[in-house]
Image 1 (tube, rainbow, N blue to C red):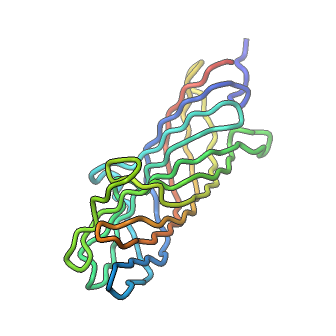
Image 2: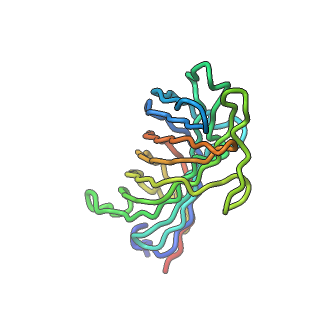
Image 3: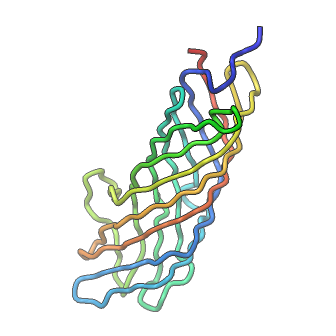
Length: 202
């Protein structure tokens, strides 16, 4: 007997590795008593440096919740910035819904969620972290994000599947700094991921 299509299944769990390419966006850093730093920032992801890039997703039928552990490392700092990164996570926690596309309802999804950020670096000779936070560990609920993603599930066994996925994310985040300042860090990125998943039949 043939198994039902993946989109007809109940619970799914997926884990992904991958990388991302961020478009240049305006970074703004404000510190008490100092002139604001504002410039068009370029970033790299460095997916295997330090904490790796990853994502995981839990789904039920058309709905899913996922965490994308995105990372950004500033590549063109002005003289005032020794270094700046959001590498322990420009994390996006996203709730998504799959949308019908060519009769394959589990291929395309759109979602909305929040950014949980962990900034690190030195600006004007001072460390910008750590900062006490509600979540602990220097993590802050910092903003909002959107995603559009596409990737076909490819069956490899009765309950298991493989999924290549491409996603476009757009996010806005404002993160507190140790000296009482803030960093406003919008991000638009293209992500390429490869994942492995498990599905239930009901």
